[in-house]
Image (cartoon, rainbow, N blue to C red; front, side, top):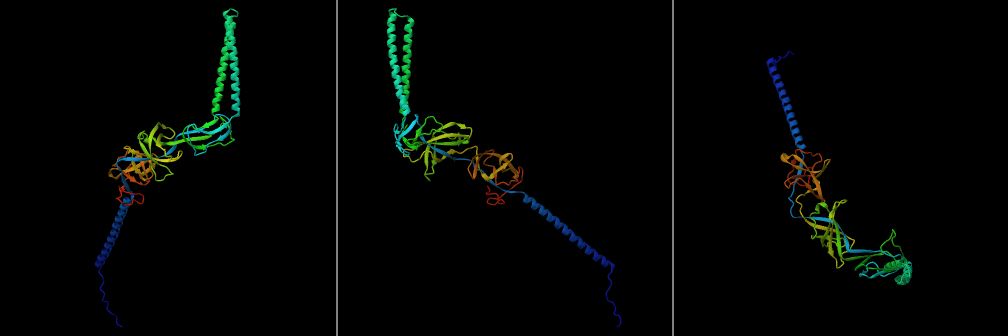
Length: 396
């Protein structure tokens, strides 16, 4: 076959240069666009990261303390009068007449003690007294006779003085013997254990035939009598509230045996001194218990209604921060910067605590602050009702 002619025109070098320049320019634009996009993305990531580094916190507005506050303290219920009856003489218990729960009158006999040793000592003392009286009479007669002889100058003055001195000694012996008899008779009266006042027998720790020893290290009361017609309630109040608790004020209390029932007692007295070991003030409440509803020796939960403290504020326990420098709370200051304020707990109320600090009702206290929070840190305040990373409970 004959050769076919080539119809393709050759591309000129100029056109090739123009095409190559266009391709190079396009590549430069693509590269520049990629660099710009990467820089913009890096800036956006940096901006997002910085924004996320600012913690979001929830704040609480403190209320100005007004009205009254309730102070709840444990109390110890005691009978107005309680008397443990110990034996004053040694012997054997002959008979007891009352048991626990028996109501007795003042002077009523509770038990009799058999004291054979004491009885014989009294018999001997009475015999010694009679001997001393007989010797006294003889000495008195002799002294009178010698006084008559002295008036007649029949005896010397020295002999008369000797007889008078012997009479004085015999008088002293009679007085001593009489006092010894009276002492033993007084001890004899303690053979009968009697009630010191009207009340109820709360304990009996002896039985018929028991050996009664006086003055031993293990001596126990034979009976205990309590006057429960009136009760005392002892409460130890913290020193912080000692100025607000004054005699004459009233308090309410509850006891476990009467759930839901409230009793009212009057503050009768206080120790007017702080116990150094516990830092508390001992106060005494009194209540009439003529119907014997309450039992002495029990536990009571006493509530005092006190004026609100103007020097203390209540904050949630979750707002407290424990640092090396002590306990503090974090507040949001100007320009959303954090400031730390040291606090001292006045009273722990459970979910909230009463603190004494340089706080004002206008301070915005951070609730559940992060442990990493430091003074001067920038924070973001969460909107009301918004969660704070799961750590804040409320926003004020």
